[in-house]
Length: 72
Image (tube, rainbow, N blue to C red; front, side, top):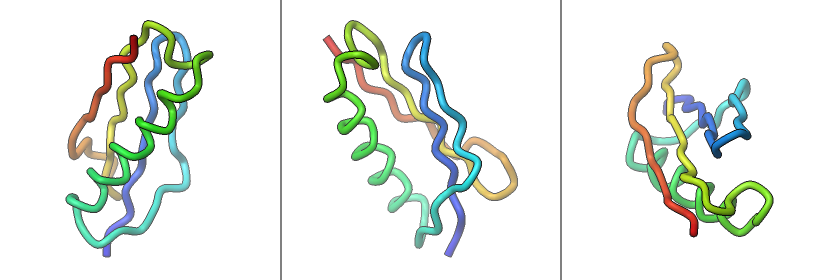
């Protein structure tokens, strides 16, 4: 089990995850990031015309991957 941190970047709005989530592996972290971006895309205040992105970091602070979603 590993702790992953999900940092949201939504244009002029962003949030850095300081708590993280314990998950089995990077595949589970990827699924979590995709689901979170889909949820964020439902909020027009954060997603209108923006590219939503999520940087996923591991326990060491290293970026494991970045997931993005273009909201139109």
